[in-house]
Image 1: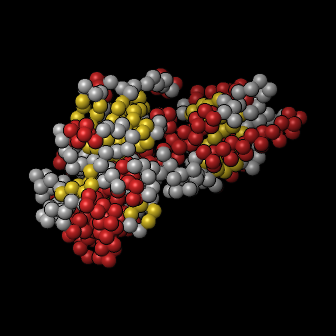
Image 2: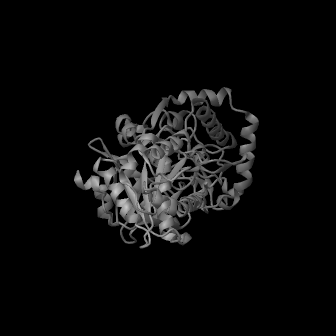
Image 3: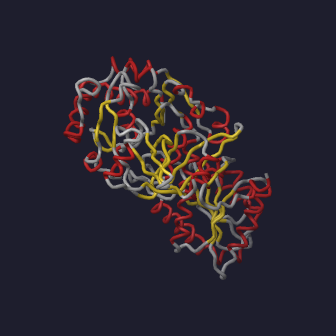
Amino acid sequence: MRSTPVGIAMLNDERPHVWEQNNPVNRQVVNQWADIIRRKVANTDGSAPEVVVADDIITSTRKAQQVGEQLRRAGCRSVIMCYNVWNFPFLVWPFLNSVGPDVPVLSLSNNNGQYPGNVGLLATDGALRQAGVRTHRIVGQMDDPETQAHVADWVRAAQAVTTIRNEVHGLYGGHSMGMETGYWHLTPTLKSLGVTARQVDQLWLVKVMENEVDEADVEEGLAWLEGLLGDRLLYDGRMLTPETLKTQLRLYLAMNMVNEEKGFDFCGLKGQRELTEHVCLGDVAEMLMNDPYDWRGEKESVVCATEADANAAVTMQLLKYVTGGLPALFMDVRLYHPDRDLWDWCNSGNHASWYAARSFEPAENFEKVTFHPALEFYFKAGGASVEFDAAAGPMTFARLGLWDEKPFMAILPGQAVELPPEESQELKDQTDPTWPHVWAKLECSFEEFLNVFPCNHVQGVPGDRVRALTMLCEMAGIKPVVLGRDHLPPIWEMMD
């Protein structure tokens, strides 16, 4: 998975009789934090961001410039400034100005009485903030698990912001059915995250499907799905046949090929109405794009948002980076059951099969998956709809939105819950029993959700990612709106 290097440096006292005495322990602190980050921020594919440790502790203007140049040449896109002792605060400027502008900055200090690291942090970080530099602060002992988790969340947030910054979103077909909340809002997205989009007509995919896809590869994919699903592959001889399913596999392979050709890091597929009425339903292709495997083995999950919802795609890409590479869910906000305080979130397409059991073994997930014939009422070209209940566990749901062209992110802690089979079927029959469902419990109330949420599509990932997403938003200049929990805004929002 793509990542960006993280730099770690420490400022010190400029008096030689001071730094000659304490620099050995300072170097030890910096190296220990680097090791902790390498362990705590490993990705699902086994990779981890490169951590670049400054060659010297900063004790003078020239050393500050040299260390900043070292981190800049190493390609560091974010910086952790460790504080273990008192330092001369003005040294931060020749250091950070040498690294370069607009890098996320974490000020990280011990909390013990032997050394005044907190004093150095507040003096130096205060100098940055009074000049308008947005920073984050963490104070705690290095061996404290909560402090380590907090630092790991910050690194994840910085990775998301700095990795997406130069990416390209492949927008296949434009926004679907006139859903303007899913439109690619160019200027606010570029200003906050730096990511851009290129729109390609869906006809391009159709022509690649017809002329460039390897049919032997399609047959292998069909055999793989038939073997995994067995009698849960509900061929009906009309909407869902081996041929319509192979068409969906051709679409999947074509998206992979065009993504590679055009340099798209993540994508969205319009589907309705051109593809769904004249080619095939996109559900299987979208599932496989988001899954961390296909019939050829393990692969990186590639975000693909259904209905070409661009704000959903960006949200999903950020969630993917925050989790270290896990697939992100895309759901319709379909139905609320007030008697159960339960949301039924379902959508044709886009649920990675990984969520059926949260396993990296395809067979474990597909044991819980059924392929149904596509609903002819909506999807005349046919193909399979993917159906399962998402596995239970903690979740964080989120969505980027705009208020008067200003970006914000709704962040919703909650969980996916498991229902007894009879109850699940009863509730699915009230919406659509052939689609995938997430039974969602939120920490916020229905009224709070309804008052704030920006659109009809919601995204999500496993675990409690509220802190990481909040810091991500603060780095990017996006307003975090956390529902169901208290959130202390940073000083720059208070001043606004």
